Amino acid sequence: MLNQTLILIKPDGLKKSLTGNILTRLSETKLEIVAAKIIRVTPEMAEAHYCHLKEKTFFKELISYLTGELHQRKKVMAMVYWGEDAIQKIREIAGATNPEEASPTSIRGQFGRITTKGLYENVVHASAIESDAEREIKLWFDPDEIIFDLYPTRIVTTGGRKVRVWI
Ligand code: UDP
Ligand code: MG
Image 1 (cartoon, rainbow, N blue to C red):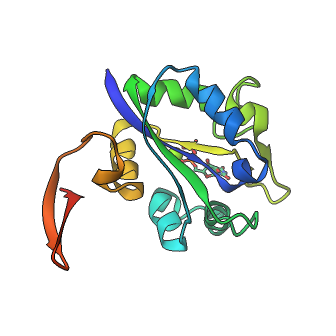
Image 2: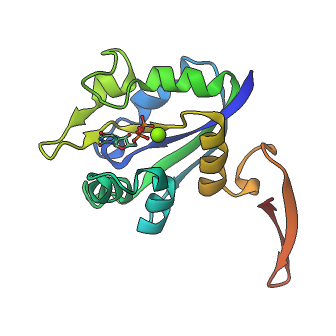
Image 3: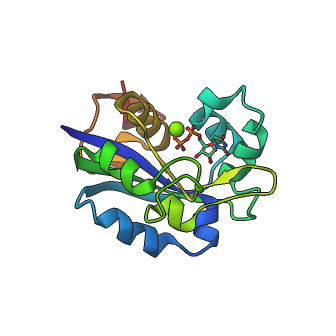
């Protein structure tokens, strides 16, 4: 099935200078990159992205991780990959959440680690299922930042300018 998925190279991936390695691994899937940018992550963005983990003991540490506070590297690289079974293919190559349990040849298995505090620094985020992908892509990207329309949009006028927004 054709679908799309959000990938983030998290601050540890950028700090460890892994951008090239990760993109090379992801290119093995032969999927199409339909959006990409480097973005500063506010605590609000990080909390919205990980809202389903609010009750977890590691939530505060996780927010500090995604904002880059933890690594003094305040940015992530966000991308949308599209194609046949994109979600499943990218999750597979990303590997399991726990880098110690991840396949040694997966991105997380190769480059991830567990901190002494117990946080999984696993280098990349990848959407798990279609509903997550839709929520996450709409959170990280505006319609005009993606090369084609993945979800329905509408036009609104703000300050005399017409812009497209997700419905
Ligand atoms: N995480 C963690 N400890 C856990 C579970 C998750 O540190 O026991 C972190 C890890 O960085 C993970 C993120 O929280 O990537 C989001 O967790 P989720 O369960 O959504 O895993 P993912 O979808 O990233 O594999
Ligand atoms: Mg997840």
